[in-house]
Image (tube, rainbow, N blue to C red; front, side, top):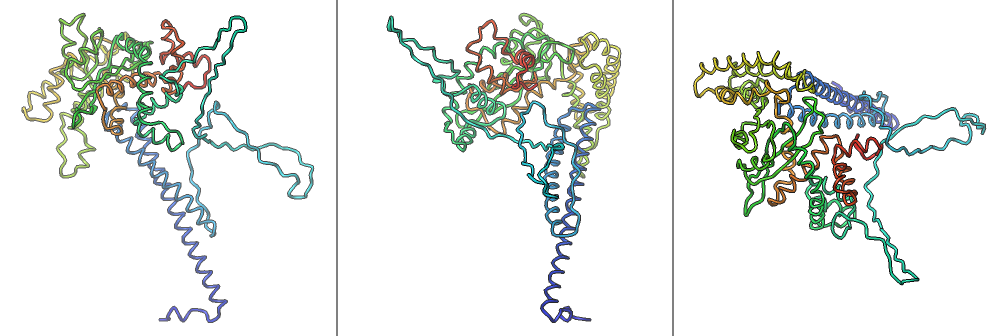
Length: 548
């Protein structure tokens, strides 16, 4: 066996050449490895993207709106985010490694990018052309055309101070001094403009950024706005926006049908936090072809007593879609003044109880600890899904057309479902897990079948659950409401922001415009500032600050 040291060259030049060759071979190997890593990362990202698209398409086709499916899509999007970042990082590493080797660089095949929107301003930067031909040196150059590369850029936030000058004049005849009146400011002492106020409000109540974090961020930008100063502006804006809130509240409570729901929100108490509630009532007539604009109304309370929905819905006289919470029962009583509300229960809520017992995917992850899949629950899910298939076909039709299709197609399925559930319930023991969701539906059958007698009723209460999603996410950021009035203020601002979102309006742009125009707007014309009217007027006028 020959020792490696015996193969080393004797002269320095040969040794130097060998070292260079070894280095070149090492660079080649590193480039090949980097390229392979880039290919693998690209493949992983591509697979994740295709899986996500498949799941979204399946959700669109089959109409699944379950919370589990929504969480799955969110997890897949987060996973794709990390894989895409890894793939880009590895691509650049492979490109750098390929520069010092003969290995061909790897370039990812990315999805085709949509062109930038036309309304975005363009800044033209022309690279200076050569004065002479680089080939022959001639100065006789004629323009043949041009290639344009567009790069999306953002201008950092700019702060400015607006000086409003009011000149004084004196009369040479009567010696009286005249001066134009001071401009209106939403808040006392008027140091904050409407755009700044709208940003503060939207960041706090729409993006869930507490005022202390906003104050710290502004300080890093060289603007000293203390927590107490920002809080002062928030309170003043809430007072100024009350007329607009009152109009939205009246609009929601005048609906023929409302979605109602509530979620927990911690409210600070002495030495602890109480589990308070945020209540929402959503008006959305679009499922049955209604022309009234959608809107959402929120209230806050420190507890969940039934007196709260009674007070909220005191003037409402229509259909209430909600879960089976007993606090709603007084509004359905026959002796309610002025009239009892019509109860419509949520089939998605009932389906969820069966789905938990029939979730094959979740059980597979539990392994040995998995509970047995209930065939009764699985059959119930299939039967309920057949009703949802019909609902997807009749969505946005008129109430009369929806009712006709339901009586023809859904009524027989509902009758068969009730008979099947009663027969299965008779075979089950009291302790059977599937007995609970069956009893939940059979005891409230009139509420679940209300959609068969009124085309305006929806099969689910998902509109209200979507309206509460912001609070479910936000409370992880701001932890708790500091007081009862703080919770009320959060509900107040959520009414404005969510109503704007439901009408496809940018909440921050809308709030800025409302705060700027509110003082000069006569009471009789306040409805022009409502999100749905504001949106249509801005679109007609071609205003660039509208989100449409």
